[in-house]
Length: 546
Image (cartoon, rainbow, N blue to C red; front, side, top):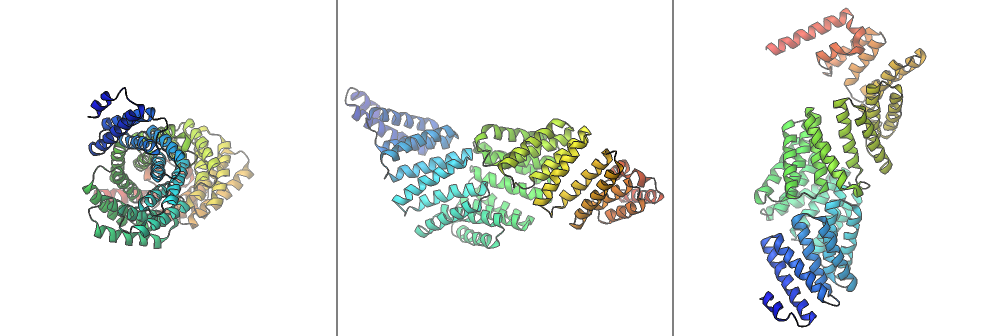
């Protein structure tokens, strides 16, 4: 009918033709919402574009319809360029009529989606501005408060920003005051409370979130988003307590949500993350493999989501570190490189991307003993340091790379640089036992490389103090490393004492490693050690036979 009408009045006034094209676009848009077909949305966009061309001054409602059609197409095919096109139309609409509430709301939604596909915080701020304008015009719109809370919650979670999470919680409270049964509001409220509770180590917030979600799932057990929020809440409890049972309960709730809707990328994403956290805490290969599978399933459903790609890379890296699997590491590096290549403009807001990529290259350097990987890792860590001088463990990671370069290149200057960064690391995290033990080991290597006996003696003394400090902080590996140091210094009686302490603490390395450790050469020449080693071998053989 529209086609016939357009043919009939083709020679008529441009305004009449424009009105018909506009109506045709609205019809195709409604059809697309029912069919879920990109072709129908394309026809709607084409009709709206033709209508816009024929109006001398397009109405804000038409511009809004154009924008919404592009937004829905972007959501359907995961194309950020369509969000930008939607924003162009919607900004024209609100510029033409600043009192146009629907235009501001759609503009906020478009910026929110653009934020999710870029993780550029500037888009989150623009989404917030648009929602704020809409709510100034009509403050009783609960759904708009929820939409605002959602983008704030996502940003606060991804950037680990407590202030932004507080703002998200405030918006949820405003929405709930208007409509206490708004399920999207309850779901977001629970998630923001949970993330903030885990971030700030506040059990009261986690309990508040749990109370809300218990009531909601009892009243509305068929809503999959509520089960997603419940799973996230329990995951945050798991992080707070570092207890596997919470991760098991989180998996159960997320699977309930997936039994209702298996097409939701967010459910698969959350399920992948809880397996990642659970697998890391108990060092379980199968859990980490499942994490990778679930996250890959999520990205099949939502490919243009950088936070998801980062989590996939992190999961692959964790699996590689646990299993010493080179293939998993190469996959992780590929995922990190894809992320960084496609989202360079967002690196300023997410230095963790660079940090974890550098960590992966550092691990590859350990695999290959190639200097270039550690050099590249140091370069990336240095970028992180410029962006975020207080980034956790950054100085330690740089120190480790310099330490490895010292081993690979045999250059004492790298050990000196490593010591400089270990010193900085200890200032930021004095209670980290691993910093002290690695620092002590580095001092031993430097002492071995110097020809000045007085300097070497001082370095060995410093190494002893650092390793002993690690032991006082609870690092049982300090016993074995002190034994190695005393062996080098020909203090074999003390070395043997610490070998026994290491054995009692169950922190001895394998027999093969002990037999091949150059630092134990002097100790291995003693009868005491020979007897100890023979007894240990016999016990091990007996255990295998039994």
